[in-house]
Amino acid sequence: MIKALLLALTLATPALATQQDEVISADLLEGWQMQNGHHMAAIELQLAPKWKTYWRSPGDAGIPPIFDWSGSQNVKSVRVLWPSPTVFHTNGMQTIGYHDAVILPVEVVAKDASKPVSLRAKVDLGVCKDICMPAVVDVAGELSNPGAPDARIRAALKALPVSAKAAGLGKIACRVSPIADGLRLTADMVLAQQGAEETVVFEAKNPAIWVSEAETARKGGTLTASADFVASNGAPFALDRSGVTVTVLRQGGSVEILGCPAP
Image (cartoon, rainbow, N blue to C red; front, side):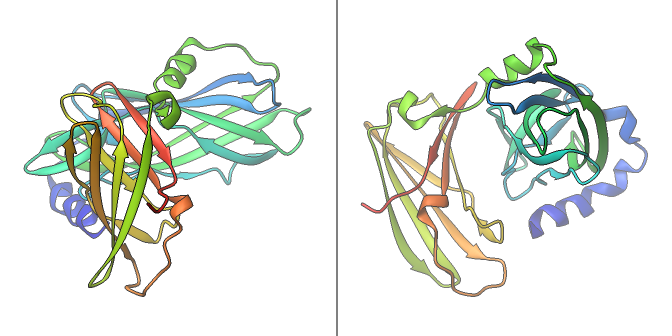
């Protein structure tokens, strides 16, 4: 996060000549009511050509989006669903996100499913091309039932990561070793090669734990990845293995593995 803020501060000055409206616009796709009573909607982000924004785990040089749903009415919870992102390499730094456009499906649970939902989101995010700048977008709309199917949302849902089972994961075993300021987690995954380039991302359930960029290696049918986990306050912590998410990114798709059990 510190690296991301330093990068934003370093690159923000040239961006003053660029207005937010020139590079990003946002809209709420109202979607439809699902069989379980929840509502499937989406946030559509349109970016100027060659501009990008970031995934939920954007890398050390990226800024993750922050969603504020507090202006909504009749909303119990909102879950953002993330289509498979792209890995970018710029000036020796790795970031993860989306270029030109992205649709983020959102699953909305109403307090009272028989009544309409007024959904409002304020999203703080970073956008980059040759320069980077912070952006804030607002979207709002009424989610009425039953709503109507939307091909754009369905396409975004098809682009979600596949599960470990669907990808044919044979086994995952994770070893923990101490480091000076935290711990290192190493995952051995019995998984068929996902493409010419495989990028592994670890995420902790606790957002106060910083996770480094993973180092990866493959030997036959086993993919091995290691990353450092460090608490933001520098204090020792117990790692919730069941809350660790391991994502294997490849060109045009990804595999999401929930949990990182001991050997």
